[in-house]
Image 1 (cartoon, rainbow, N blue to C red):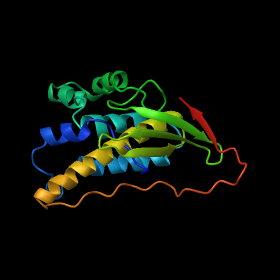
Image 2: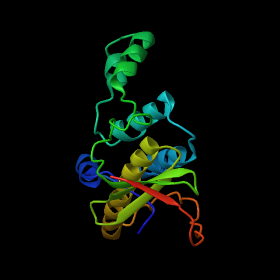
Image 3: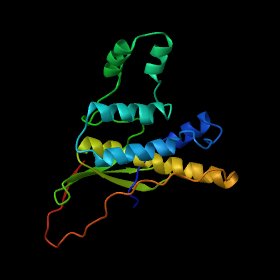
Image 4: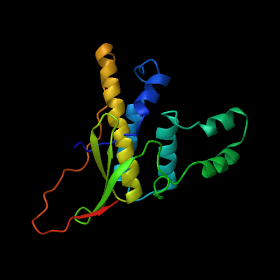
Length: 192
């Protein structure tokens, strides 16, 4: 089982909308996802700032949501109004269980008292099982979905690179090492 996860459909959407691979110096969705994954893993809790990062760093970058701020700014709307609109448009991804990302399909959630963290598992479209650990249940769910999307996107880009070796894939951030539980320790609570 890999300790990574992805959103279903991201590789197909990304490849169909971006025919050419990113050139050197251009941002890539893989790099954006790797940075976002690292941020969520390090977060001690959810926040509006992290919600905005999920919205812009994943949903807008993967073209799963329009960049409303860009559209409003192009129309000459002032930043205070744009900011007020964004406050109403960005779901509370990191603090609400109900604010799932598109393609999020969590198989199970687990609470480790030994780790003091939540785990969530999602199966990537390619079939890999992804288990991700975070400080809260909403963060673990979003992290599992992002890691599954990363796995699918990385595999799609690796396949494309075989056909045209131009860039090397962005490495996925690794999770904390697994520790062995002692016999008799109650380490898991499973929620379905």
